[in-house]
Length: 158
Image 1 (cartoon, rainbow, N blue to C red):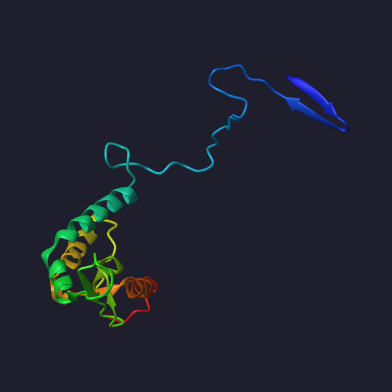
Image 2: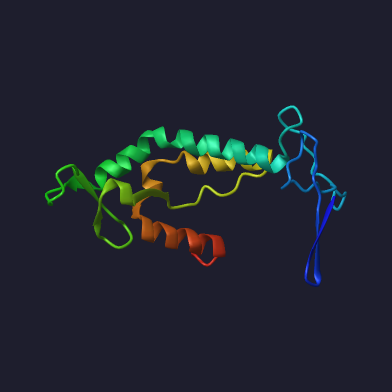
């Protein structure tokens, strides 16, 4: 330990020679301020919430390949005739009735797929997620975000 005096201020400098610490390392004691969450899934590595999030994500990813989704997009598209040479098609938003490129649209479930937080939710979630094209619509990003926000607030009437 070195003691440096500079006017009225005293600086204490500690040199640690251990290979596990450098001069910037400050070791904090881990306190038992709150209990750890139980991890009953995936060989003790996943919480219940993480497990159902994993399942929900996998199902949503596979729903991209569901044929009614591509049929819904096919019915809402037209050939693009604008100045952008690489764009082949544009899609009609069912919310605002404007045309958008494919990157700016989402295929929306008219009835939300809902949450998946336990095994009891699984059949209903799968039934709503893998629905037919009558229950799907093409929305632009802005309309889709607005509809999703209203659904989460519970103010959207079905």
